[in-house]
Every structure is written in C-alpha cells, then in structure tokens.
Image (cartoon, rainbow, N blue to C red; front, side, top):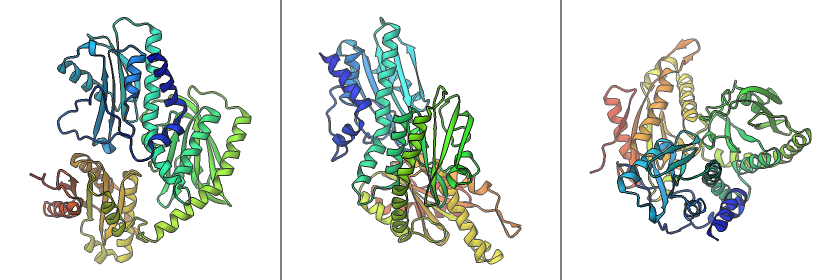
Length: 483
C-alpha cells in the first residue's frame, strides 16, 4: 500500500505542479520531519527551503525500499545550505557514515547530472540540478531496473524543487492587478515545453539589454536573471535585428553560460514583439536533437502572438512603476527603493555591498561632468551584468551604489563585489578619444555576521568602504564580524 501511495505522490510532483503550487503557495508549509535534518558543515546557515522535501523523501525511500534518502539545496550565491533525510531505522547508520554521505552529496550539488557510487552500505544513487542534489541509498541487492527507476524519481523530485521558487513568485505576481512580465514568461515557457517537449528559454528586453526571464524543460534554472550579450544570437533576435534564427551547436553555448552539457543540437529562436516594438525572444531545442512537427511549431507561433499584448501591458506597467522611483541617469532604483525593501524585510538575513567610484572628482574636473555621467552609466551596466534578478542594485547618491544580496553571507558578498570590481577595472573606457582608467572601492556587510539589525547594515558597509579607500582603493573590504 505504501508503495502505491508513494508512486501516486511522485506522479503528482511531476504532473500536478499547479495544484501543488496552490497548496503550498500560501502562508507557508510546515511539516514535521520524522527522520531529521541533514548535518551541515560548520558555518553553513539554516535557510527556509523553497519546498520542504518532507514527506516526499519518506515516500521516495519507502517506495524504493531504500536504506536512506537525502535532499540538499543551496541558497543564493551558494550562501546557505539546507538539507533533509529519511533513514530506514534498520540501516543503523553511524554518525561518521552519515557525515561522509552528506559531504559527498554536497560535493555533487553543483555538478548537474546523475550517477551512482558503491559504498559499504549499498549503492548511493544521486541526481543534481541547479544547486539541488537528491540521493537514495539502495540495498546491495538491486537490479538495473531499480537503478533506472531511482534516477527517474530523483529527477522528478529535483524538477519540483527547482521549479518551486519561481512558481511561488508567479503565484504572488498573478495576485497583482496586472500580471508581471516574468510570470507571463514562465507560463509561456511551460506551455511551449508541454506542446513541443523541448527545453525553453524566454528573454525579455529591459534598458540594460535582453535578460533571461524564465526557463523550462532541461534549461538551467540558474540562467534566470542572466543578461544576454547583445551580439549573441538570442540577443540579436530579442532586439529584432533578426526575426528568427536556427543555430546548430552546443545548446546555449553561444547564448549564456549554461553549466550543463546538452550536446550538439538545433536551437530555434523566435522574436517577440507587439505593434512593431520588440519585447524579447524565445529559444527552444530538443536533446537528443530531432525535427519539430510543423503543426506544433505553428501552434507555438500562435501562442507567442497571443502572449505579446499581455507582455506589452505588463512591461508598460512595470516601466511606469519603475520611472517613479528610478535614477534617470543610470536606470537603477534610487536609495528610497532600497531602504523601503530593507525595511519590509524586517529581520531577514542577507548582505549589502556599498561601492564608490575612485577619484571621481578628478575625472569630472579633467574630462567634464558629461564624462562623469558616462562613467556612472558604465558602472551601473557593469553591476547589471554581474548581479542576479533576485538581488537589488541601486544608485544611492553621487558616485555611490549599493547591492542587496538576499540570504548571502560575507564571503559570498565579497565574491560578488570582487567580480564587479574586476570587471569594471579591466573594462576599456574612454571619453571622446581620451582613455581613463576606472576603478571602484567596495564595502561589504552582512546580517547577522556584521550586525544583528538590517537598520545598521548600510552603516557597517559604509565603514568598510572607508577602510577600502584608506587602504589604497580598488579593493573590497568586509566589515568586522560582530562579537
């Protein structure tokens, strides 16, 4: 009986996503774990999972008569780890063996794909996807069919876990008077996935360029928020320089940095527009590569046509809302937007980066204020190319900028800050034929490491920024840890 219930539950994970989203999209899911929480390495913080794997991992373990089942996820920028397990009481894992298995699974977390390893207890079957990993410890006696079914069910579990954050956000977006463009993009991606059985990427235009708004199928969820190169195939189709395009090669290799190796395939890209105005583009492909039915392709084009007015209405609403609180030079939100967001968060964890252009007064005095404005726009574009959609960048005054990184810790924020710093300092920039070496200094603080209150976070990062300036500029400094 339990096996039948388990298989039904796993089928719902795969096929009943909208029902599950409705069930857990509200006030929060609180299910008690019967087996326990994965032991995480020292320094790893607890985060609230997007969708608790309990009781699914219990069902998964029991349906396969496995010795143990695990699910582990990471937070933004690799900052937080959360994990859950279900163990067969008869297996009698020692603490050292559990730590060994969990450590091995965490090593596999960022290596998308599956595999198996023979251990002394049995065979550890695992699948990793978009920063999540799930594993089953099968008994020493099993068949090739058992392995195949284990991999399949683990992939179903991970598919659900990776889709959950976006579905939750979409449910919130749909409650608004006008549906958000990213919500429309997500529904469009899923619709195309179902019609053609393909992997899908949807990119929408914004002032900085074409940015990935949604993915479906086998496309990497971590691509969401990535800014596409304007000269790349999908960027060109999004801007309308090409209405459609077909590319042979590694899926997404020329589009964005996808961590997965899909192999060579044919990618179809179609332009999105409304009343002659470009909106973005859709890319889809099959792997293994195969021809797309003409009738299905025609249906997709009709789906795109019907979605375009909704995209336009949503993007116009978002533009009007953004214009009311946006720095008109750089296009970034202003200080008030950032402060309102931090105030709404209450006691949430996360990190903030404060950045200031080095020797900006000298640039203004030497090349003039228009050159200074151009340098500020260049720095804002650099930030936009590095940070993700879930982060909040803002121009908070003069030559000073800030980036809020939800759930990030100090090491993660330092990594992001140095990525921005190195990209900015190494970029080629000149004003009317006169080159100028640009650089910026950064201060980093995180809650709760640097301060226990978000109200003090910006002040702590500002103090760290001052230390970076005093130490010679063009560097990132973290605020001291709170005792």
